[in-house]
Image (tube, rainbow, N blue to C red; front, side, top):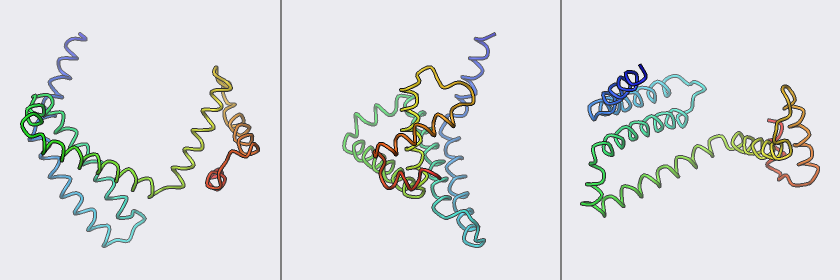
Length: 167
């Protein structure tokens, strides 16, 4: 039974990860992005243009992943890299630069939220270090509060961490 399920899942994924499917997705992305930006400019809503753009950039990245999977699966990527080293380096550089710039822009979009989450993670890791077996069911909030208070009392916090601690 398990082999049949694995076989069917593989066939479904093989059907999804083909060039025509990703081309359809890309076309939908372009028309979707255009229509959403148009709607966003007509109706002033709470959704900003940056948020719409980041959403569609993430979707385009997903389509890029589908294309990459197709090329890796069919061994076309290795052939392309071997025969076009300069283009490969240029494409890889553009992809890396795009990922870094989108990541930085996304961070700047909600900087306080990201900094607040980083503070939560930092204090949670300290809580785990002090209590590797956990703090029992229902005690996380109080334990986290004590860890955060100790962190601020020790003078380890920056001004930005103090500002976002209550958010």
